[in-house]
Image 1 (cartoon, rainbow over the protein chains, first blue to last red):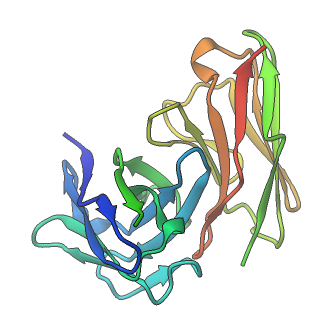
Image 2: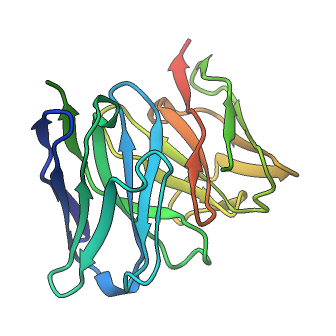
Amino acid sequence: QVQLVESGGGVVQPGRSLRLSCAVSGFTFTRYAMHWVRQAPGKGLEWVAVTSFDESNKYYADSVKGRFTVSRDNSKNMLYLQVNSLRPEDTALYYCARQGDYYGSGSYLDLWGQGTLVTVSS
Amino acid sequence: DIQMTQSPSSVSASVGDTVTITCRASHDVSTWLAWYQQQPGKAPKFLIYGATSLRSGVPSRFSGSRSGTDFTLTISSLQPEDFATYYCKQATTFPSFGGGTKVEFK
């Protein structure tokens, strides 16, 4: 079954850290770049980060640069997002998403997980 | 950074109507433009890539167009399952989403 399953969210105090995970199954993980996208409650979508299939290229939104780190373990079919120095404005549902390889080199996200909720509050 | 300005933020429509959503990029993104649909409480669903190409399995009542840095999503003959929020996204190395358009029942 082709799917992405996020985990690791929770309630955390400002300044603390979390590691979000995305378990991949049903397709060849090593073929694909992978993204994180977040959505604050009642708000729109915000792109967060991307890693290439081999981690040779990683890019981040300005809002998280220096605080968040994307990584992957291709041997375990896992994607991660280390989120440090959390702020209340980081409160959101965090989705992992696959960048489809059928559509040319554009960042077209053709498979999404259901998200894991991070709440930053004292 | 490339900003994506999407309008309207909401639109009221009835089954059978045609709905048009527009998105303007602050810089040239060529045809690196996608559209996504999000139902309440669900993950986004990928609809259109390359500004005009329908993903396999997406109904033909959905269409996309481009004029320079202006992009349009048109939904013809709106169906009950089309009432949702739609997002454009420029699909360059540093992607960014538009603010979303909620298609509501009139």
